[in-house]
Image 1: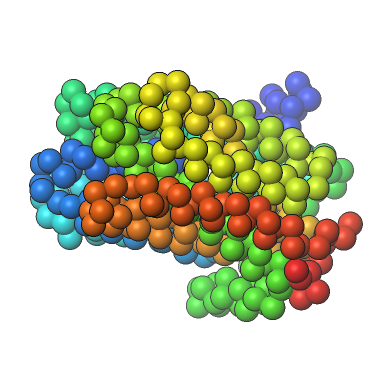
Image 2 (image 1 turned 135 degrees about the vertical axis):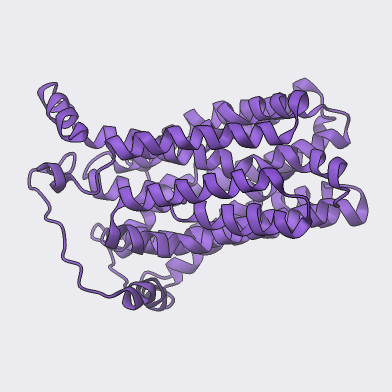
Length: 434
């Protein structure tokens, strides 16, 4: 009722209700980004309280990243079958429940089960495919811009949460910070319940920029067939070189962002004498630049060759990571790093989604992008565990950061091996190859 009334009010002001749905998705992705990124603040406190090694804590965080990614294709299929609203509410309830249960954990296996499996599964039910689904389903025009805005919610999550969580943890301990995240997730769930609708046709609207209402497709598959759908789609696209290039470059994206910086940056700065609150503030600075960089990337992806955009994004990110060890971890050096690195943290998402749509068509974009995003999270898990192991074995993170920088430079060259997509989507055409 509230969404219908709001849609009518917005229509009188000539504003499409898709923007309200995008706002609810933005809030969801913001709080889940906070839930996924928060453990990076807690690595040192957990080491001190329980005596766990960095590599042991990182193993739980790696599981979280893997599940966060591997759930993506299935989350897209679930959204197509059960609706966006229902799946988002389910995801938020699961994440809040497992985080609340973690307040009483005392053993490493509980950390793995709750923060690894539980948070990974819950956040994976939405993941980045939520943004791709909303952008392609509710918007016929401005898809790149909308995807940029929704992707930027990850950066905003850092901007809003990490400095505050670091401060709360320093003053009151990590448990109060976890309780705060649970409260914010509850607020997001209320907003989704009130505002989120599955499709424009639910309220009698065409997608933004379109003239005709798109009817809701019938759902005839049973649950077993639903689970098989993402696997069948993967089998179809596995013959396409374009898919594997996008998968591989997004794997490197995960290695060089969430798995490395989001998880280990605060601990890295601590190794060089920078307090956790100050390090979290640098992450927040990255979030500011990434917020505008990702929205700008969405705008650019509607106007320019997305392959060349990704070439520059990966190349500049690689140079930034190679520069980081030479900042001497001073305020000036880290600020310079935060600016250049932050501008394209998640800027790779809009052009990657656009290329996915152009090569394979809009109908299966969310499922196919779910598999590409799985590559991102496998990369993130590799970096999360690998960097923690490096610190445990060699007492330094630096080899992991150098390796990530070199990988980004390789990704910038790999993306140019793609042929320019035709004006019409290739629709799972195996000819869309390198």
